[in-house]
Length: 232
Ligand SMILES: [Fe+2]
Image (cartoon, rainbow, N blue to C red; front, side, top):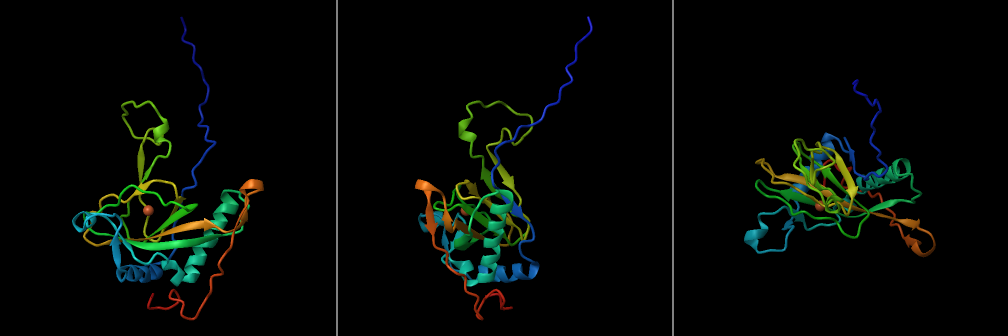
């Protein structure tokens, strides 16, 4: 008996996507160099609340949590980028975004960060200043799946977490609720990055969800650290 062949086509239905973006060449090498210097001169505290012995195993974060406020044109550049993403890709009606907190991270050889998220914010972004960066993102719906099969190859359908390799000078943007961690840093040189939290400003929402968040005007001053060749 002749075998019957079904010649259909299979396509992936993909109605829901996460707003995770990588903006390459967000800064140039000269800006990057100035920012690394800025990172190097920060005062760092441990990202975990623990004894000194334990705390030194983990990534450090700068004491300054409004770092980009000192580089207003760069801060504004990223805020406008988020507004562009909101308008052009997410097709949202939004009046603007503001980076309300920003800090540097320092990871020494052998250190790692805990899996964490950034509470109280809409989007978070990380600016990368070196090569060989790695960040692990945890799949947000992993806990919703009840089945676990052996796999012969890792795919986005079955992985619990995924390692991203953002290149030098790139900005990784993701929802603030996305769990992420810095895996163990294996290079001799310290790893630096600049993290920022972004909040929508202006008026948004309707009826009972209406909210108005006043926007602070970013002042351009002559003492603007970013335009200063010293790099701040
Ligand atoms: Fe983080």
